[in-house]
Image 1: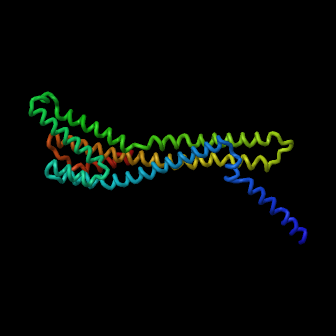
Image 2: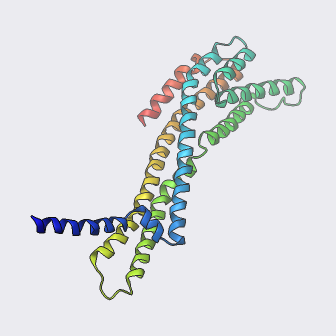
Length: 260
């Protein structure tokens, strides 16, 4: 019993010493400028991607909650002025409101020029259609802003982490190259610490990839509704036809995108 206790007293300090030489703090202390640079780069990429994720999530929630009410209130207006005011009040994001206002502004501009005899040869449908197309392109660029950063982080972060791991292993092996006898504990510790960089790269990349896929699908739904609303606006401003309030068209567009 006394021998066992003595052995235990001797072994505990050795384990504590080994634990002190393994971990994030030891890896950071033993790392060089390149290792620190890779770690800081991964941290910056993680902060930037999470900022985009939170910002896009809040924007998508606001937009998805305002779409149905904005379209319905627009078509409930008795005049174009009432409809523009209604959709401007309901659409906090301004995407659908901007589309409607641009289309009505284009229609009024065409009527003014035609009355003056300047735009008599210009077709109203083509003129308003081009305006709607330009507004959709601007809205699409606004909705998809930030996705390029998420895609870049998701595709490059694992390789940045892998580069840090390779450099960390190389750095550890170079430090052991002068030893006459290499023990497994001296190799396993630094190599295990270097693998932390690969794990960090995956930790940065996985949320970015998942968020990119989720936002891409959400954007498809939003743009489908925007396209349906634009078609209804075009039919109303050119031919004076109200196409079922635009709500049914948006519902059909959502069903088609979900089935795809």
